Length: 389
Image 1 (cartoon, one colour):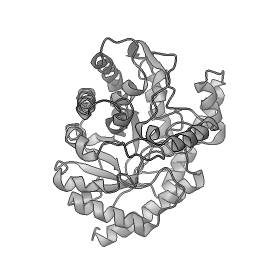
Image 2 (spheres, rainbow, N blue to C red; image 1 turned 135 degrees about the vertical axis):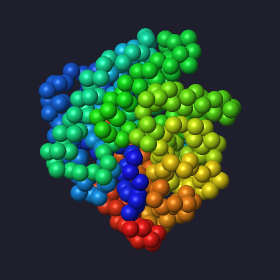
Image 3 (cartoon, rainbow, N blue to C red; image 1 turned 60 degrees about the vertical axis):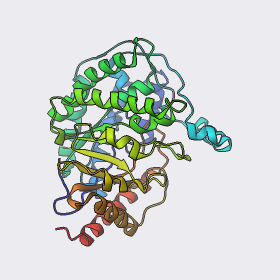
Image 4 (cartoon, one colour; image 1 turned 90 degrees about the vertical axis):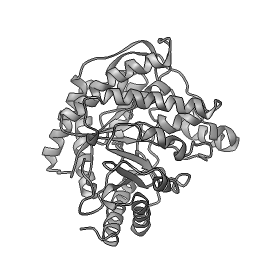
């Protein structure tokens, strides 16, 4: 895993805006409608080449495939594993329940949006088994081809994969006798996905919103200790799935949900960080542009990273169309670097994805690229002020 050896490097969390034509087909497929596989494949490849080039043009150092060929950051797993079917409706988030006016507005906005929803996912109705590495290996090969075709040379390319915990939390268990049995099979299946990404030569990012988000979703009316027990079980499952992958090839992204809301029911980072630190990963990727969590970088002053770990810090918001001023971005990076104690162990990123399921993005596509340019400029300013180079 590359460090910010000479300057603060930039990255993002994975999902990027998809072209409208591709989004429409992904939405139709998610609804169970018939789509032309050849057309979906063609549009996916076109979008992939486009998004790879746009990242480089916008100043992204550590880039990916934008998740263009997936309908969501975890929903694509239903095409790669057996055992899933039907659908169910996830609970309303605890913060929305506290504010009925906000909840009504949110529900009206979602009802009018043409998108793939993360809140109505399939269920586990049979044993979960991985269906072979063909799909992930093809995704890796497509990404490699797009890099070559566009002449893009990221400092380091990465691909994302979901945590077993987000699948266990979102895809309701209607088959296994216990949550642990479900997690065990998910971990075994996802190990194939994780190992294939690393074998292809890419950095692996684990998307683990469950390690914070499920506190105000699945565990909203249960004691904190029970939620922390869930976090411990998921981290243990992740470690087993990563047993043959060097920690320096993995970064772990945790967030409180990529939605605009009060977020005043969120679990504090200080409560979960001691367990997160048990994960055998080389970097943690956390959101610090989010107004509810912008102060929490300070926890690393009391709970420092391991000597061989990196902090990828969200300093760009992924939910609003404000384009952050480079000076504000630089200020955020400097404060975080001071808390970590070494700017070479800090990488600047976005809080979360810009289109975590097809059509759900709130930021206009042209604004996304402007935000990336501001991120790159802010990282340059911070590098100068921190005496790097």
